Each structure stands twice: as structure tokens, then as C-alpha cells.
Length: 227
Image 1 (cartoon, helix red, strand yellow):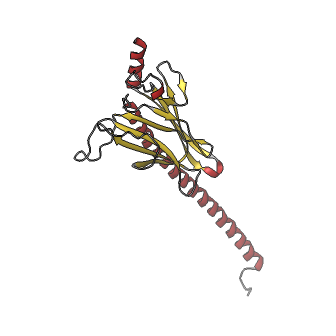
Image 2: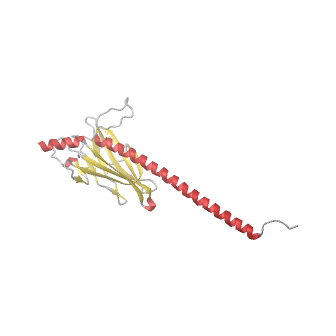
Image 3: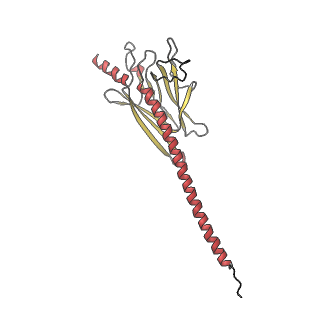
């Protein structure tokens, strides 16, 4: 009677085949996990972009001339990427508690800072301060009283348009009319561009852009043209 069993060669061959199968399964699982992580990251980016651009759009749509504060848009950069700032008066003041907070025009400030732990990742901050009679308007970019609107950003850019469609890289509302000519002007439209990192190491980013028409800017420009 012949003894049955496996030779060493057969065992080694089985181990090699099993190793190949495990390797293929591992690669497939790794690729699947990467797709899942990438999808979740893109969903987070789209959510942040939608939230930030909606807030920007509402603030800008409510922008209005004010004798104490002009519309100011300044060019800036961090790490070689745009990090523009905005300061203007808007009627889109956020009221979280109607019992303790009042409505009315507010000083809206947008500024950009570098993220903690990775200076390549920028953060967009928003400030919202109600303008009370006799209050001291602060249009700087200090972070006190501001909250984080979006992070993991590569760049923040704003472009400004007058009623004739001429584009400007910056906007100084206080300097576009004589001091005796009030109210101070605001642009007719503002283009907002946010670039979110997908992979800083590979220089991969996703760009979102929206353009907001400002009724007060169009009306002010029309009145100035008629005069």
C-alpha cells in the first residue's frame, strides 16, 4: 500500500499561491480604503465650501454704505498663496439669541490665518460685530471675537467689480469718493474663490468660485452716474 501525502515542492507551491492571493486581496482592500477616504475627504471639502460660500454670499448681498466704515478688500498672501481679507458693513448680522442680541447693520470682517501644525493649510475666519450709535468701528484683522468658517484651505481670493464690469484686485471704499460725498461706495459685485487642499504633498486642490451681486453697490453707482 502506497503512503499518501504532500511533497515539499507541493507545499512550497501552495504557500506561494496562498501568498499571491493574500497580496492581491491586501492591495484590493488598500485601494478600496483609499477610495473611501478620498470620498469622505471630498464630501467634507464640498460641505465646507458650500457653507463658507453661502455665508459669504449672504453677507455680501447685504453689504451697504455706511458713514463710519467703508468697504475694504485688501490683497494679502501666506506661503505664496492668496489670503485676501474683507471688511464691510452688512445687514446680514447673525442673531443667535434674539433675547440678548439686537439686529441691525454690523461690521463683517473676513481674515485668513495659517493652520496649527501645518502652515500650508489656511483657515478662514469671520467676525460679526453689531454697529451701535457712537461705537468704535474696528476694521482690522485681529482674531478676537472671530470664529472659524473654513479650514484646510490653500488660497482665498476676492475680486471686485464696479457697475461697468471693470475688475479690481482690491477695493478701498473710503478712497473712491470725496469725504463730503456720503454714503461711502461698495462694489457692484464680488467674486469669491476658495481653494481647498486635497493633498498638500501632491499639490492637489479643489477650487470653488461664486460671484455675488451687491444691490447697494449697483444703486450707489447709478446714483453717482446720474449726479
